[in-house]
Length: 363
Ligand code: ADP
Image 1 (spheres, helix red, strand yellow):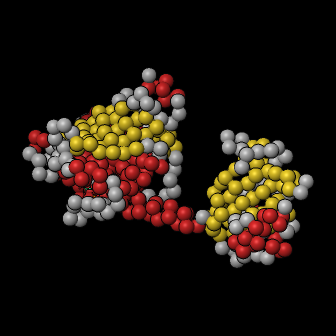
Image 2: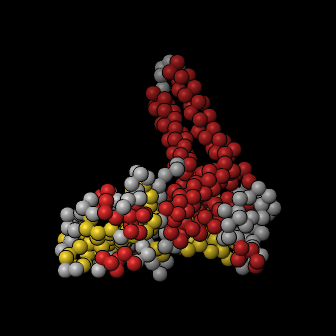
C-alpha cells in the first residue's frame, strides 16, 4: 500500500494513534525538507504543530475517538519545514486501515499562495478604509471640535458660577452634566475612528446591523452638513443579528454613503437626501438599502462598478465597491445596485440572519 502512496503526486503522511509518523511519501519529505527515512518514528507535531493528536475533530465540531471511522476532515493549519520556516497548508485527515493497521492518513497541500492572497486582500481593504476616513478627515476634525469647544465654555461657566455668591449648586451640576455628555460624544467619535483604522484580524461575531448604520452615520455627520446633505435613517426595530465582522460591515456602509454624497454633488439643495433603510426580510436576511437622489448609474456602469479599479472620480481608487462585494460574499451576503424609478441610485446589501432564532426575534 505504501508503494501506491509513493505514486500519488501529493504529500501524504500516515501516523499511528500516538501521533508518530509511520510512513511519509517522498512528496511529503520534499515539501517539509526532510528525507523520508528521517521522518519515520518522529511526531507529526514536527511537521504540523497544530494538528490534534489523539482526537479527531468531526465536521459538527465535536471530538470523536481516533478509533472510530470518520469522514475526512479538512483544516487550514500552519506547517513547519525542517529549516523552521512556517507555511500555510490545507490538511486533510482520515482514519483508515493500511496493510491491516489502523492509521491516520494526513494529506498536506501547500497553500502559502492562497494565504498571501488573503493577506493582500485584507491589506487592501484596510487601505481603502483609511482612504475613506482620509476623505472625512476635515469634517471629523470639525465634529470633534464642537464638543471640545462646548466643554471649554461650560468649564469656564462653571468657574464663574463658583465665584458667585451664593454659589448656585444646581447650575454647576447642570454644567458639569453637559461637560460629561460632550466628553462622551467626543470619545465616542474617537473610538469609532480607531475601530475603523485598526488593522486586525477579521472577527466574526453577532453584529447588530442597526448599530453599524448608526456608527457610520455618526462618522459622516459633519461631512453631510458641510455638503448640505440630509441623511435619513430608517432602521426597523428588533432586527435579527447577523454574523460578521463589524469593522468590515461599517466599511461597506461608509463607502456607500460617501459614494451617495459624491453622486449628489451637483444636485439642487432640496434633493440632497440619502435614505438608509435596514429591515428584516422574509427570506432570512437583513437588508440595508442606501438610496440617493444623485445622477444615478448608466446601464454600462451598472455592470462595471463592482469591478476593481473602475472609477469615474478624478481621485478615486475604484476599489470601494469591489472590496465591498468581496466582504459581502465572505459574509454569505450580496450587494447590488439599481437605478431608482424617479432619480438617483439605490445600493442593496443582504446578510443572512445569524441563526434561525432571528426568526422569532423579528416576528
Ligand atoms: P471610487 O469611489 O473610488 O470611484 P467605488 O468602487 O466605490 O470607487 O465606486 C466605483 C464607481 O461607481 C464610482 O466611481 C462611481 O462612478 C460609481 N458609483 C458608486 N456609487 C454611486 C452612486 N451612488 N451613484 C452613482 N454612481 C456611483
